[in-house]
Amino acid sequence: MPVEFILYSRTYCHLCDDMLAALQALQAEFSFTIRIEDVDADPALVALYDELVPVLVGRCAGEEVRLCHYFLDRDGVRAFLAAADPVD
Image 1 (cartoon, rainbow, N blue to C red):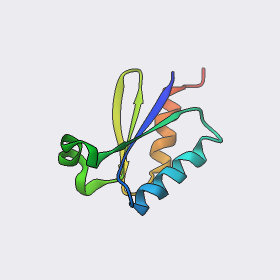
Image 2 (cartoon, rainbow, N blue to C red):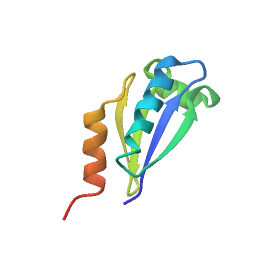
Image 3 (spheres, one colour):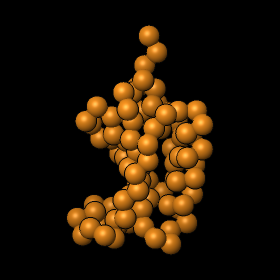
Image 4 (cartoon, rainbow, N blue to C red):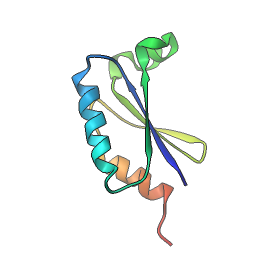
């Protein structure tokens, strides 16, 4: 199943840049897309994620799971990817 990660981020956020780089490094092993959403562009997102940025949400088969914030949880992301593409 196709997997998309949504990275809730903001401009001039070094933690956001670090999480994006760590997530992109996993694309050498796994197939997924990354969508970056600027929390400051939407008051509802600011209300949800303001102090938690960056926040990573995984989306697969219409379901969304908040996976981590501040730093990439590589084990959690790998588990999410494995669940999305189980080996027969």
